[in-house]
Each structure stands twice: as C-alpha cells, then as structure tokens.
Image 1 (cartoon, helix red, strand yellow):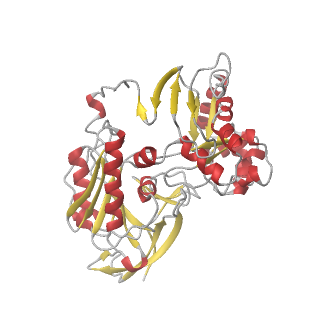
Image 2 (cartoon, helix red, strand yellow):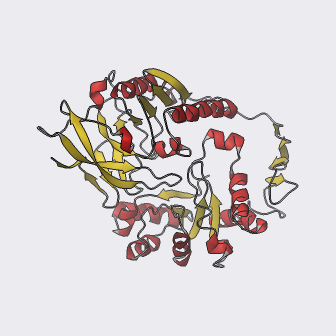
Image 3 (cartoon, rainbow, N blue to C red):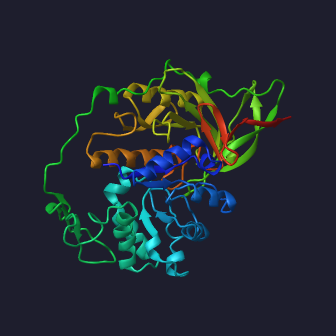
Length: 425
C-alpha cells in the first residue's frame, strides 16, 4: 500500500507556502501517512526552518555533519545515504558516533544504486557495513536500517523487529560486522540461502505501452548539437555545470571558450565538454545545448542516457557533435538505455526497454552490461567514481547549483531559468 508522499522536492514551494504544495502535504497528513523530504539547499537558516515547519518529516539530501544535526534539531528524521555515487554516510555518522545525538532519529538509506552495486556489493547490507566501518556500533547501524525506518513510516507493528505478530522478514548472518547474508526469510519462508534463490519469483508481463518510449521526432544530426556564438564573437564566456565526485549537488562554473566558424568549441584541456537534453516524450525534436565539466573525457566521444531524473528526457554528454548524434539516435533505435560512443563506433550499450528506465533481463546480465559501460567511459578518459549516476542527475532541477532542462539551463539556487552566455568578447 501507500506509506506516504515521497520526496517533496519543490522546497521553494513549501518555503513560500505554495497552495498546491501545502495541499499535497495536508492530504498526506490527513491520511495518516508520512511526508518525505528533499531539501537540497545548503541554507540551514530561516528558509530551512520554514521547510521543516511545512510538514516534511525526513530528509536525505544532507552531505555533512552540520546538515545531519540541523535536520534532527528541526524534528526531522535524517536519512544518511550511500548510493552508487553518493557517499554521505561517513561525513554525517559522526553526529551519532561523536556528537552523541539520539540514533533513533537517524535512518540509513541508499538513494540510487545501479545494478552493478546491487549484484556485486549489495543493497542495505552494504550501507550498514559502511556505517560500521565508519565507527558506528553494529547494533546501532542495524537499528538505523530496521526499526527506525519502520517506526518512521508507521509500520512498526508489522516490520523492523523480531517479535510476536510481526512479519517474519529476516536475514541470518554469522557476523554482525561484516554481515554475510547467509539466509533470507520473507514472511516465514526461506527465499534465499548461501547466495542461491530458493523460490520462483513472479515476472511481470509488461504492457506494450511501457516499451518504445523514446520518441525523438526526427533523425538527429550533428547540427542539432551546435552551439552558435553571438555574431562576431571570437570567444565567449559561458555557464558550465560542474560535476562533483561522490556528491549530488553540482557547481555553477564559468569558462571562456573559443569560437570557430561561428560555433562555440569544447575545451578538452580544461575538461569542458558539451551536454544536451533531447526531448523524448512528445517527439518534438527539441534539443537544449550547454556545457559540463568534471568527467574528464578525452578525444572524440559521447555518452547518452534515457535515464535523466526526474522528467527522464535524454541526456547526451560528449566532445563530438557527430558522436552525440550517433548516441542519441541509437537510443531511439533500441527504445532507451545508456550508450557510449568513441570515434564513431559504439563501445557499450545497456538496454533499458521498459520506459527507457528499466530492464526485464536478469540483474546479473544488466550488471555485466553496466560494467562494460563503466569500462567504455574509462576508455574515453572518465575517472569519476560511478560517473553514470552523476550523468543521470544533470537534469534534476531541484538540486543546486546548475542543471539543464527542456526549457534551458536552470539556476537552482534561484529556482529560475538562466542564459548560457554570460558575456562575449
């Protein structure tokens, strides 16, 4: 069933008492459900206090100890995350281990874990192990992944503890620190043991409408990815989305780029390449172009993904307009996923045919394809940890500082559209 309203991302709307946002929160609270938070601003002053007063009961967007303390002081439960690319537990667990805050007010979570992480490293067991490695008492770490979560969502009479009347969802382990998962029990039935599944898992027969969802409207050409400079300019100053390794927020950077034949060029020496958002839902053929830094790409390449939170248009990053067009068209052909191109040929493809977001293939197969994707990105010069996850968030226009959307660049700190060009010379 429904346990709450997930991730109230429109934090300016809550802060400024937008009637629609407050109505959604009120409806959730009136139904006795939990309002999930998503406060991505670094401002912990009056704006944050207004957000907390607006009703969100938790938040997972903190990245440091001060964030963790501020959220619990405002009466929220703070979620410390370890995803495939977001490493925020180590910087926040000290609020419990050193500052002595009540661990009942903290929850461990993931927030975006891709197939390779799940297959090779685990899910919540990985997060709990990491918290323990960061100095947390094993029983406290387990508490923050079980009973705290169940209590927060009003499910403590069913989940989160081993007691009469509770659902028999259990794991058996021989070591509380390293947490080898030896047996998994769901509703009293052994479903996995010694790494082997013991039951038949139902497989959803996806409807046709869930497939073939990448609608480009036309065959894309290199010209669709051209960025024309102001007339007469030999160089331009542009806004650049700055990727930060292991963090969800970006930096709003600027760069001076050369112009050739009226077109703005990338700057490989300073790690500035192109980014494009390709509209894929309404077949408009629209492409919004900009610049991004931080991936480290070299030579002629492009990477395209139909996973682009939360509107899930297509995001293409590259140093070559020709390869960007090839990558985007390829995803149109296969119905979505992630593809990496170099020098006009495809190095890797992860097919995600369900809404362009998911695969109905076995997780091990998807993880193997994803590993080839990671290797292909590295072959193109990328050294960022789990850079694909960074790629997938570049259009999430509720996390500061600078993002791209189908309407243009978004200055998230001001919650408004902004121009690509700052000045020209």
